[in-house]
Image 1 (cartoon, rainbow, N blue to C red):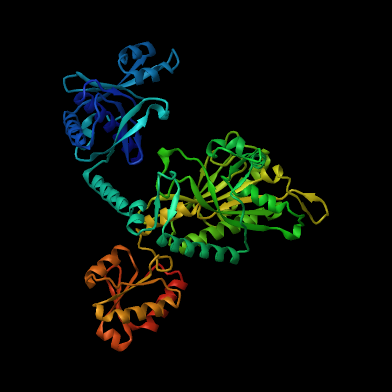
Image 2: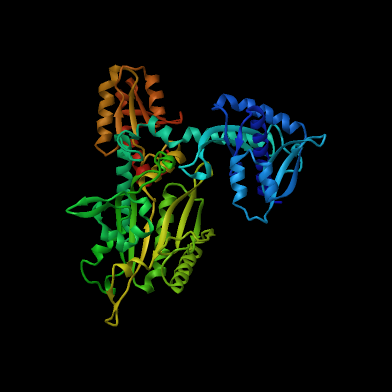
Amino acid sequence: MSDKEKLATIRHSVSHIMAQAVVKLFPGTKTAIGPAIENGFYYDFLLPRPITNDDLPVIETEMKKIIESRQDFRKVLLKRQDALMLFACEPFKSELIKELPDDAEISIYENVDAKGEVEWGDLCKGPHVANTREINSAAFKLQSIAGAYWRGDSSRQVLTRIYGTAWENPKDLKAYLAFLEEVEKRDHRRVGKEMDLYSIHEEAGAGLIYWHPNGGRMRVTLEDFWRKEHYRNGYEILFTPHIGKSWLWETSGHLGFYKENMYSPMEIDEQNYYVKPMNCPFHLLIYNNKGHSYRDLPLRWAELGTVYRYEPSGVLHGLLRVRGFTQDDAHIICTPEQMESEIREVLRFSLSIWKVFGFNDIKAYLATRPQGSVGEQSKWDDALESLRRAIDAEGLPYEIDEGGGAFYGPKIDIKIKDALGREWQMSTIQFDFNEPELFDLTFVDKDGQQKRPYMIHRALFGSLERFFGVIIEHFSGAFPVWIAPEQIAVIPVSEVFNDYAKKVADNLKSLDLRVTAELSDDRMNAKIRNCQTRKIPYMLVVGQRESDEGTVSIRLRNGKQLPAMKIEEFAKYVTEKIETKSLEL
């Protein structure tokens, strides 16, 4: 058994112990399911009364008693009818058993005390530890309570789900809880509020982002960077409408494959229009606006296009899961012969962008053909091999994501690891031989014949909203100076030096630096603390000496100091950091 399997077995066993404790503490409880999950476990219950976080320590205490009583986990095999009799008073277990074949052999796990008495039993495939003594009673913790629909069906009963985590030893538990504390500190919703970057207004529409001035500054900076890099890499930038007639989405296949994620149509001039969930059909209309020769290809077209997709309210999560977002979309239309080199170029471009932001732990996932997809198998095979060769050429580690492709072609998903080692799926390079056919794209080849081009979809950041959420948590709001919403704060030691502070700020603003002069009545130390909370990279403290000498005293947001500099010298210093996209102050 691998370490990963061993840990999963411990967590599954602790889940059973938690259920045993809950049933004992809350008579009348009905049990549902309780699997091990990444980093922990959960169990769903129908309880006789609501419980709160105050109940969790009581449950933990009972669990420790069970663990310390050294109970065996004993596997028992039953016939279907016997299992139904045993769980006759457990409606959720009975439902699961009834779905099994009549001749099924059903396993349960019983918790048996030292006297051989059965303390509790659960319908389960296992595996479990042999005895509770294999579980360290100081290496688990119950974490939270949530609601969950039975079997994930919103038309079924709402159950109480208790989440917990379990580890082999207290040291690992302590490390994991410290990790969770750091995750909470970096939560983009918390940091975004502290830094006044954005807000969401449920009363006006869930999953829709309102960018505040600070977030707007960052977004403009990143969009400008994005456009500049795309022009440098041979792209042209498009702008397309937000709505389109239904035939457009019928032709593209989205109404057939994606309708549940599209918003309801609106009737205009007695025809149905949909807000766009994708940008690609619009780009293909532009392509078909005129004829093309092989000499025109490849065409690399990009758009920061805002799209709208319905997501259930239960999965919405700050900037990371929204209903309206700006996709940094691109479509490359090329000849079949150009396909492989274009995929390589897209992959190279994507990796170069991620490294600007300091992400060097990058992995690819090669997604293969899913069920219900379209297109000839030979084309899928050729495209998949081209994607594989592009990954190999970049020396990028990768895994196969079986069946993870889109309905119209295989793809590469790029995943990065952040400062906490968490993996995020970001860039996508998606091959498509379906839409050029559906929209009848053609070009005149060297032989004078009309031929079908190939198309590559590519999202680099994925969406600006999700990208912001990731980098907020990666940097914990302490952004590199080139993207920081506020780059410099000028702080006078007293109001006597307000005029000099304004002069310094105006001088730096003239160089397009983002500067504020802190001229409130607060004391200097309070201003410094406030600027540190706002995570401003540079705080320039000015008083009599600085005013006399035309200098600034430089304090970094981490409390360190740089030598005093002339205003012009500091401006040159900061400008170089910005121009080189430095990650250091």
